[in-house]
Amino acid sequence: MTQAAPVPWTARTTLLPHQAEAVAKLLPARVGALFMEMGTGKTRTTAELVRLRQGKIDHCVWFCPVALKETIRREVLKHTSCTEDDIHVFDDRTSEGTVPAVRWYIVGIESMSSSARVIFTVRRLISERSLVVVDESGYIKGARSRRTERITLLAREARYRLILTGTPLSQGIVDLFAQMRFLSPKILGYRSFHQFCTNHIVWSERFPGMIEGEKNRAYLAERIRPYVYQVTKDECLDLPDKLFASRYCTLTDAQAVAYAEAKERHLCEEYLFEDGWARSLAIFRLFTALQRIVCGHQRRADGSIASYPSRRLDLLLTVLRELPAGEPVVIWAKYRLSAADIAAALIDEYGPVMVHQYHGGLSDGSRQANLDDWRTHSGYLVATQACGGHGHDMTAARFAVYYANGFKYSERQQTEDRMHRIGQTREPTYIDIWSSAGIDARVDKALTRKGNAVAAFRQEVEKVRRTNKDRVRRLISSL
Image (cartoon, rainbow, N blue to C red):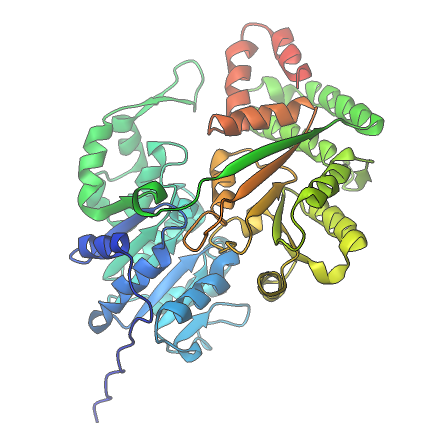
């Protein structure tokens, strides 16, 4: 007896004009890329492409950052007539023997780096009649990374493949190769990353491994054009303007002593004067150590934590008192220890019911429950950029305070667009807290230039280190 085909699901929401345009462009092809700026509705557009291909696929396998799994599930339920029973979100219990037959599978990208259980289960699911989505495809831009290789290899079995991102080239055209290879090696026409680099990357002769320039961009643009739909918020949405403000504090005496000692300790490391990855790692460790101190903490060599009195937290509380009463606020922290300090101070000031946390130290369920509670009851959402900076809708707020920023502009842009997206009707205000320390000045300068603070400093070191090590010491001492 032949089993009846499942009843097709339908859409619950209407496409915006730019979303309909994206669907019209990508529907004729089996592979495609939605390079749609954050907040323009990539998820709704993707759901429509899946809907229109229902008769040709059995299911959709949707890869996304682990922190976004619940968000994607809710978005599918919001925009489609699918029910809870139509969606399976991979968790610790999902295996080859337990995975149900459903229309949608949502898989954490990070799991493809470390979990054999997830890898083998995904391998069983993906077939010619699958549609595979990689959401936030910057997670697979590393051409030689383990998860990039695994996801790309498994997805080759699928008839349809789609990538989504608002920042496709955060580090330049070198990011393009792996993303396009996931869709099809035929798009760019190169069999290897080496061949791609030979034709499009200008390497530094003086500093091995450093990219000095790019070439033949027009060729790449023409090759990818049929498979890419790209749009920015300015082009398709009438959103209110962003507003920015900064507040400053000085270091306490204890912080200043620890800060100076940390610089001197790193100056004694010969790694700063080595080549390649060793120097890059040493600079990143230096920046991280200094930033932790200005935030009030230091991780010692034995793994223990030293805490310092900090005016940064007092300044945060002062800023919050200046905001209109009753307004929901997002507070972005760089480190979990900072998030814990902030949450404790806010609980003392406003009570536990007003404070909601979102960071990697909590389970997926707890994070989502806290986010839902903040959306419902307002108050303060204390989140880390690494965990909460992708995909979430935080348009309930119009104020965000940055207790400390990440080193990359792309990370800052992600967090800003949690509030500046479809659904925001008020001007969002972003308030930065900075200290008088050189590390904060470096990060501020890099973000203003839409760059990477660590990369910019590394280039300065590379320019002077071969000629005079004392100049490197002076450069680091200036931080």
